[in-house]
Length: 474
Length: 99
Ligand SMILES: [Zn+2]
Image (cartoon, rainbow over all chains, first blue to last red):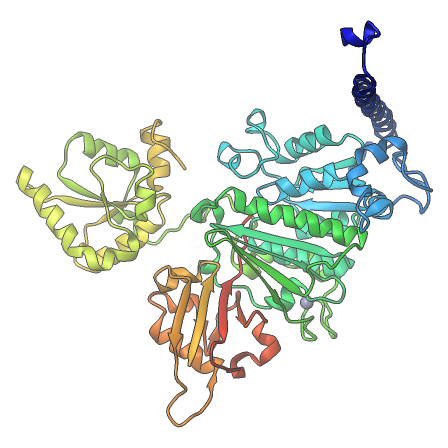
């Protein structure tokens, strides 16, 4: 404490300043007490709710009581007022908005790049019940964008990891872990327990399936997507707006469906879209503001541009939400979404193709053998140039599949060179990332002057797995 | 007729990875109006460098492509029959599924 004040020789100004300082300290201590009380309360409430209900569901509470004891019929408890005070100070949101949020339940489908910020924001801002559904495990190459997961959870369940992160932010909300893939068989059961659904998945069949399910159950759907350096966002089946099928009655060709694991994605891009999805979910759950229904937002990270356009309305011919639609829950459960879209309900693995005969193929181990024996040959790597820069087998020549047609003379020259050194006829091998494009290349080469060309089965993935364990996979 | 065309969601890859194209397209000889149908066939023969099936199907765009005329879904302004005007902005967006 200031010695001058203790000595009694202080001026009025000094005393006023000292009072101000002590008032500040007092407020800080009071804030800390509030926070500790809140922690204590929510711990008690959480323990009570765990005892009360261990099952994975988000039951609707009766109108004026809340099972977790978080919200009273009349208003917010003191610790809630403190925690959400910055929301309460918003005239457009206020106590009413917060109360609605605390009474709402939201299902986040997918705990990946989009789902990470969605779940974190919805948990922190006080959605009463938050469900997360995913059957995936956390991988190291997820962490650059799936910011809800940490290194300690690599190899473990994404849902467990996401729920732990949400609990760490806000232990006062109810979190429901659905450690399974959302599919036509279980979707009606799971989705029916929530008020709002967030589509944060990474594949086309899931998008159709989730939309159909939301139409059947009358749930608003906050849909986001991101790839490369672009993102898209809209709210389906809300306020009379269209559903996913109204916009896309026919699925696109499989070749048009790019995936993050093939095309890449800049980490922040799904983050931006996910944040906006959380925002739309809050707006829909609380009926505050104008949700992005009947409009779509397009985000272009490269040029820093956001475009919002007016979408068509609900289609009267839509087979699911249209006037004469006869799509029942039974139809839904029997519908084969993978077959409808000709693509798998996961971003993880690409189908292994079998385009060329066995005689035109070689295993990575056999290739290694002839490589060690210095058999004269040329290895053509048909991946795009930016892939080749990541890692490549020593001595391989990069000719991307897209320009192969115009590079046949390059191959001819390389073969001639390789043959000259040894005086023997050089063989021709083709490699790519996973062994699909290399077959396409061999197919083309076989019928264009190189009938002896062979592809390395399983590509660099199998090279890394079976031959060179130190070869980087990506 | 001067138009601004924009390709997104990966469709830019079909036209030399260029997103925005400032183009001059005239109505077919004997006609005084340029429709979206005319523009699509012009784009197909003048801008699309590879895999046209990734852009068109029949005389329209392939499924999964959204078309905007001046920031409005073309379904709201006549689709293929929509008549274009000087300085119109037409955007082609392939829908994304990643996350
Ligand atoms: Zn519909």
